[in-house]
Length: 296
Image (cartoon, rainbow, N blue to C red):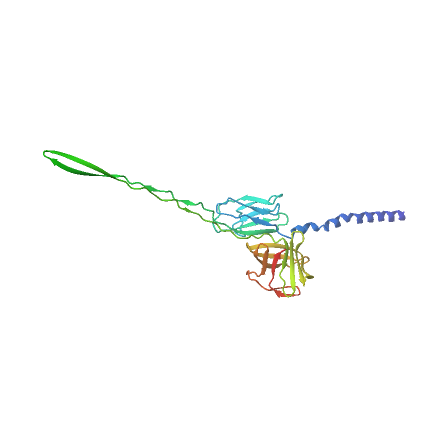
């Protein structure tokens, strides 16, 4: 009887241990959260005072909203980017004024990570003004002169008529036109690989990726010497179309860090401070230097 109870206790213990396996498998599935590392991409077409819609492209399936101010509670427009092409075209609730700034947001509906652009409303292109031709007419006038001749008792009168005419004058049509100037480049998301200038034999490489986040590497004489940042979650806030704030949190850290970039072209930026001034910054063991990055 004792041997039977020991065997039965062993079976119960084995069944209990086996029940904990599925719970362990669920808690280790963290790879799916890597999509939260970055905010969505966003491109916005020019907006005019006559525009009735806001259009462009963004990360597929992202939520698109348009606001009059950064923290406005009411949206000027809202919609969703195509899940197959990323294109969107959403109707505005009202006309926009010239030189007004509107905030266009793209938000990941699952992770709530977002990216926005500040777009200035442009004046609508004007049609050429045309002045209708005018003409003046003058009426011909007649002059009458009377000469008298006397022959004895009989008197005759002769009349001569002179006509005067004037030429028609015509004014030509005058045409005026106006052109709207646009920016010579536009900045998209920082996704991709960026390499820096060389300072004191050191250089850097930054990689922005929607899968692996932000990774920064330091090189000396072309050889890698240190990883500065790895697998950092980051988000982008566009202060102006060319002045961006990057907020990132390195893997394993709970402290957020910030840096500021000023784009001088679509494929080049400088590291600046919060006042958009170029500054010298340290990179690991490298001495402080002014860094300029070019897209590889």
